[in-house]
Length: 318
Length: 306
Image (tube, rainbow over all chains, first blue to last red; front, side, top):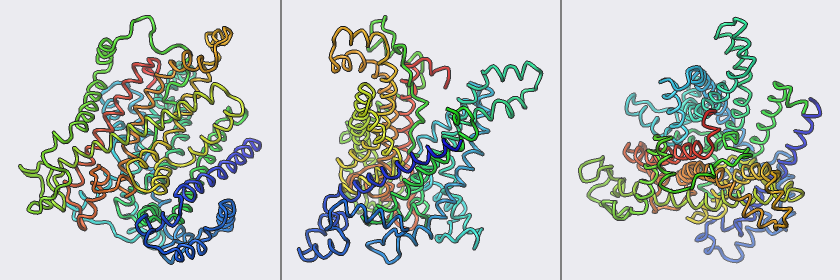
């Protein structure tokens, strides 16, 4: 197990380095002139030569690319996420202030997706091609096609029209004011949770159908065990392994999906900050946030792999 | 949600040729058997075709100009003159939804045509040649897959500046790793087969083996992947438009319309929200179900499992 953990971590470190190079290439090198990215093509032409040179020197953009890359990586390693070009708050402070809200949304949505997805999958898999199975399969296919942010906008509208309700605009922390925190978090969590539940239900259904046909399940039935314990104690634990993997991957995608969803709800989380950075063309903030999201994504994948290895000895000893 | 199917859902092991070779392939016969086998997919395939037709014939179908403002009818709810209502500067929502299909489909097809295809060819080459090229390719693909696809697309679209071409490029790049991995896995299992070995023994060049013996076997997984990716690409395009890094306004796209609706005041009018989103959902649903049907037809072994 230890050698597996070490191998997986070393691999993760390599991936993080690769990711940092891609982020740097995309957000520093690809725009050509970073000032064009900051000011937009029209704004750029209005700058005089002297202004351009001053901005370039101020932002450390006149150094060779390799130096810029190393400086950026060094800054991040020291925990310095830089500063927005447009506002006073440093990116690090912003992440600490807004990050918990998004993390909360993500965790809550994962819990919701399991609460909805797994029971639906069990009902479906136990009676394949029944009415309930067909309805739940159609719903899961439907939810794969519904854009989360649109569903979010509809929910906001419906809550307003039907109940005259609007969620609070500020997001106090869970500890300070749990009730209004929940009001802010619940909407995005439900939308993102339903989206994941569709995948979870699909995956769990097909995985359960496969496991149910295995010999050991038939043996358990043959020795006289009733249906319910066979499903809960023999079939389900094995059927859930691929679902755990999927859920971990989905959690990474939820972090991305929360960007438009937070915009739809007006949630003051990290996703909304990402939206702000994009609409302000703030490449520096973007660079750090994109890197942060990618690193979290990589870490989640490592965590999932280790969990699976811990649960499933076949992987550990390979 | 902008998540692609987990890879297990694709037919990875194609040891036996998935398509029956004995029967002469004909378009009408194929269509007929497709309809017989999965009528639901055929129905949604027709919807997908209808959306494509709508995009092609948008100027004829749309009752009004999508960009023309009618200042006497601003923010009007659906009525007999404007079936889907008008937006805050008096543009007809129905016409804009119809024209929006053009941007969505053009971007989706463009992204899949470039991205999935490029990825597939890359996977073909890396799987076939193996060795250092393969190892390097695998690492690059892994790095690309370390980003949730929406975030990568956002970053690239922002870096390149908003525009029609850049949105296609941004989404295409996120499609490359999937094409690469799936096709590589297929090729890895194919190249060990004896008929490939026989061709090599007869002195066929690498290019000829890839083109004549391996490529045809990759068509089925490619088609399945490409149809699924169409749906994913449409959702990413809409999300980019919604976040303001898509095709720049005033071009009507479904994502732009949803973003616009948030600017219509403190509370967006419901008709500005409902119709563009419904258009996205129906279109994506159609392509996803068509993809499921194509998978069932091309790879019958998956039919029983899923």
